[in-house]
Length: 578
Image (cartoon, rainbow, N blue to C red; front, side, top):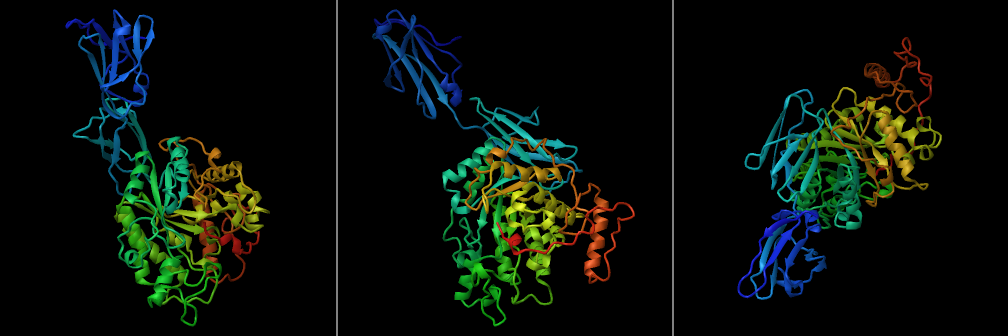
């Protein structure tokens, strides 16, 4: 091996001369460099040579005419190796182990317009060389700036320090919408569990995921971190908090990934129980007698009142707070009413439940966007064709959010829906057909569809192949993003189906839209105008009371074989939440 002489020969004081050489230039060294580090000592009598590391005796190995020492178990920081022969002066070589890679921080941007000029700014700590999109970039007091004629979908940042540590980060800018969302779900109290957290982070390092969906408020009404929102403090909903928000966000961002916080909005038994105990009955959905509504298996007072200003403020403020803490996106779940009837919503006035839901989404989204994050909402699969059942107006909500996450788990559809005989056994078919419906319902908005994918076994065993079939179905209708759902925060089942991808080159495909009545099977079309013509005519027919026979406005142009297929009857199973 080629050696770099670091200290010369030395004699005097009656001692032998000794030389010390290292196999690489010394100074700051990365962990990999230290693994290969070796010091070679030469002297007339190797038996007389004494070696020390940081003042402590160490042992080398005789290799030919040299004594070789290879450091092991080296800790972070500065170290000194020394060799002395007899009573001669010791020869020293100093080096430093530096394992901290440069820290990249990209400034948060307002909503990025894909057709407008864009300037990327940020800071990088500890870097000696920086590249953005493979071009050299100069730091000015640790800050960088890169101008683009048009905003890219994503940018690649590479930074290296003096020790050779490298940080590579793909930053998804979401130009024209939400980009590169390949996420896994984890509950707030599971974040501290390394056996659940680390597999997700490992997939991010392998570029198989690029987003963590971390709960902010869960189905039990527990807030995951130490929120300062007044009602969270008063009702003690942070009592079972599971993580430090700033620390969790930094961990995810340091890996070049994003974090989307999920807020279970109106299924909130913790706040509901507290409200009833404190005489705040207007906080909960009521029955016709004025008592707390019993939502079947969910329980009494399990759903809070989406028309109450304090409840609205509570959920909107949680989203705004999380955005300011660094969450990249906020997804509201359970933005709906219970399926059954006999419900009273104090304060709703003349609005329908669906209208009240849209109003909430607009209020919360405006605040989240102003705080620097993207806003989204999760909806049931059947909301595509039975919106009144759960008060989820998909087109109405889509006007106010950046993304919508329909829960289209194959296990949660009834047999025959979308003309799929057995959805749980046909994951590709049911996902493809339902997502074409959702693609069509958000036409005319900037909302992107990012589906929830079934990453669990129920009611039959599922495999990675079943997860992969759902991802492939989404991609085949132009959707290159997904959220993996497993209510135990386990990602392993579907992990083998995930492929390493780079968001900077992996753009969404061409969208495919349904061209039939909502809820029916369709061959689909990439002609957005044609799809819009059909759905507008169908909406007008429904709004007009379904008078007469529906006339397909496209029959003169194309006659889909399935156009006369009767709409399937909605099933309760299809409305189960994640």
